[in-house]
Image 1 (cartoon, rainbow, N blue to C red):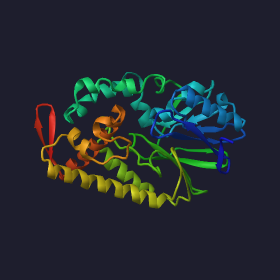
Image 2 (cartoon, rainbow, N blue to C red):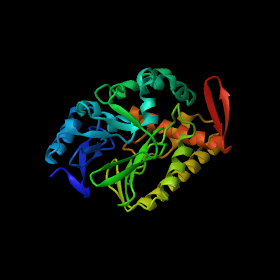
Image 3 (tube, rainbow, N blue to C red):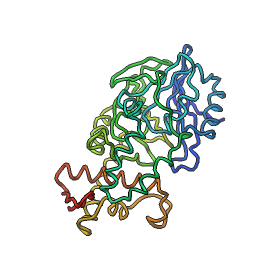
Image 4 (cartoon, rainbow, N blue to C red):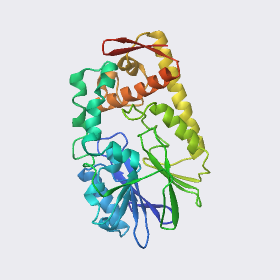
Amino acid sequence: MRTQQVAKNIYRIPVTLPNNPLKLLNSYLIKDRERSLLIDTGFRMEECKADLLAGLEELDEDPSELDIFVTHLHADHTGLAMEIIGEGRSVLMSAVDREWMTGEDSALARWYRNVTTYIMAGMRLEDIGTLPTLSPEVRAAPLITGEYVPVENGHVFHIGGHTLRCVMTPGHSPGHMCLWDEENGLMLTGDHVLFDITPNITVWGTMEDSLGNYLASLEMIRQYPVKTALPGHREAGDFASRIDELCAHHEIRLAEITGILQALPGATGHEVAQRMKWRIRAASWEEFPFSQKIFAIGECMAHLDYLHRRDRVRIEKEGELNHYFA
């Protein structure tokens, strides 16, 4: 059996993410007699689609009869939404992330405008220009259309015997949302809280202080009396203790970066990222897959931005480059 019941009327569908260190997406189906809800979908790739449709078939659900909720804009969560959405059905997502993906101001367009951030970190323009090939059309969601319905923080809907409240948790994306079922103490966490891996926190052109936002969101959501957490990837665990671990992880990261700058004053973001410790199967920075270098530099820049905003590091500019000093 591919699917697993994780709560009353809630089923986990494992969706393989080919050649991706995340390995699996947890798509969740909440069964309802009138209209069921699918949460997150996988990349727009045939392997993902096969897993998702097989899980829905096992649960006796017609994908064209579902509504879909996506926790955030990343392609491993949104990619298949428009592939399977039926006529008259909706794809629900936060208004913030929907705006980020809309029309001429799409994520790809914003990426090109955000190139300056990576140039200031010390990357070469010719390398940065190759990034969109890492997320070709087959992996990402198409342009947002009318089926995408924006929802705001606090929006409530009732489905499958659950009352779900949307909780805005910016950080991993500008408009990331969790779903909270107070009666059952159940939180669908998306990628805000993961248990065997740490959510990537990167720089965003439309969100200042992404790490600060993420840590504040963690502190806020830790106050919820969560009994059951359903994450977007891998396995679950104890909610409150995991949040403590995530906060501690970022404190260690901040101390690590400060130490690197004390040993190498004036380093660029690229140079700092190369010296940080990353959990990846690569013997050296040169062996990092390019996509993982981008994630690493983006996360490093989010931490440097956090430190700079709190006067814990200073910046000296040299042309287009930023040099950092602890």
